[in-house]
Image (cartoon, rainbow, N blue to C red; front, side):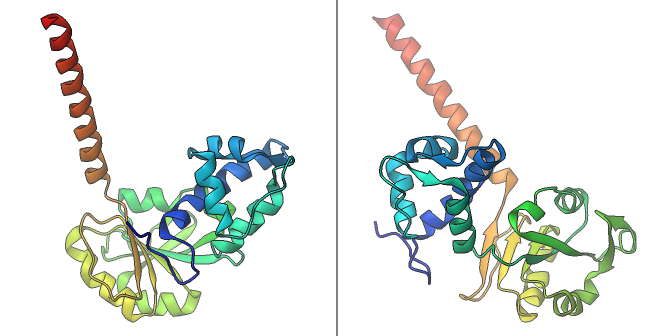
Length: 226
């Protein structure tokens, strides 16, 4: 199977692993570690060392034989590859329980993001405050995007509202959407959507749990039969 390659020439699967490498490098830096081997970095990131070396080769980073990788330099390099040199402005649409939790997530700043706006359609929510920001009405979506220079929208609306809001997000010029609504979004080819469906992920875990239970039962039956 041929890996999908984006405009930068880096395979999509590699891009998906870069944040894990960056997190591991920042953990190392926080512990005062200045250099790391591919084996140690791969273990921290949860991948094989050969996979890590292949991924980093797409960035033109090969480390130094006998020394390994400079932690700070590699972290800067990966940050640049991920487009994190400049801070990205985020708007969150849908400030229910999930939206509140997303707004109050403490890791945005350290990863190159800033939540600049919160929006909701409910009169019970509009005007309230979350994470130090006043919730605005979704009627102001286009103005908010232009006013704050929003480049990423996090969508935490009910499924029924997700597509209409997405259409407006796209029309406002936003090309990156992180979708928490439990539905598939239809967008133009030049718009990227990353969907996080908690229910689906739990169902997949349930499948694996059942498969292990069945395999265990078969194994016990084989032992009893022997």
